[in-house]
Picture (cartoon, rainbow, N blue to C red):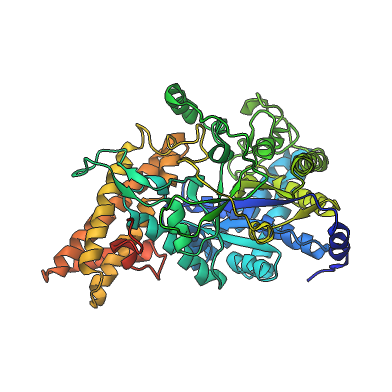
Length: 593
């Protein structure tokens, strides 16, 4: 459990003079890739993330605990990722993948020995050692169970794990309240299954929110001509026991929303150029601040409001910005340039404008020397922000720093060490404290209820990354299938026929997978466009075939063996959410009034 004497001393120092709190919120997510390809798109995404991000983050958390710290991270692990990390086929695949990476390093060692490339040889040995340690950590230290390792840290009080929508569906654009309900309820159910408690917080997919109002589908839908009442996303959360979610600062305060991906993907810059002409930022509300926690409600029925934590824009830019973010330091390991055929990386960023041919060799000591300076600078920003708020208001504020977890370790190799040092530096400061979102919520007990507009954390703060001329066709399929699922769930949801239930539940799984926001994101960024378009088509076609089978069987018509074989193949391939319930898709539990 580690020596807690240092932690106790820090707590004693902080009792009377804490000015504020800090929490990282790391979002762990990948779409469902098991049995849907391997390389370049598919299973190796999951293997890379586990080897370069999830296990390294587990390691630094355990290192901190061994050194007498309680890291107090808030981690959002999506239900679809939780299911994949718990799947036995993933566990076998990861062990094989890590063995391949070790062998690839050994081949590089032979090559660099022949050519007498001393620094590259040292790096090849570094990669062999790195993947050997990760393999040992996965198989021996964590017993091949990454989810259970995070559960243990939560059970011991060192971190908080929050949930998300089932498959990371982009909730504001789903056309049926039953779809939003199913995404949220499945998210809560999967969390309870693996973590043995109810989730208190949720990472809304893409931080996208929509209040209650009469809504019209943005893509033309058969039979829909007039706006119809829709519940706010906040209503589904509070109905299912969720106490808080994360929003972008532009949703709280107005002003210009800052996109976190636009520097990385040229296709997004093209889309933004089209959208920007019609975009007018909301006037900034200066009386609101990311240092406070507010309550949000769009309901007129007196439902319990839901708290919001707001992404701090200044600390966010220090990590995300392509121009001045820490990962762009020329000494850090470059993500893009890889050595053929094994894929290991031997070059540093060099400069923001260096193309792949101009990258210089990576020197780990130079990179590691930069981490403490960056972590200290980041901690300094956190303290300044909290000091300014404390001096102005006399209250204890919070800096909430949400990021996609894969930034740390995967995109930015040295990022996990940055995380560790920031957490140590803040914990060691007698005026600051680490917290989880729930911990801070319990302490401050917010009472101010506000309204926030529709939006996300994309550039411009709206939906254009997920809904544009390249993705409109995906929403047509989603909208068709949502209504079909609702109709069949209403018609057959109470059946006792096990075969009919199997068909309908698999159709529901295919619909949830179809709704994943990842497909539109990958299409819009052109980062894996063909793969994403294939997945949308595949899940839609599976859904259509399964619902036709359900209608045929439900009427008592003959269903041939080929159809049952197809069902079995779908169940084997898209094998998640065993506890899915048809009632979620049939009727809204608390209808809009």
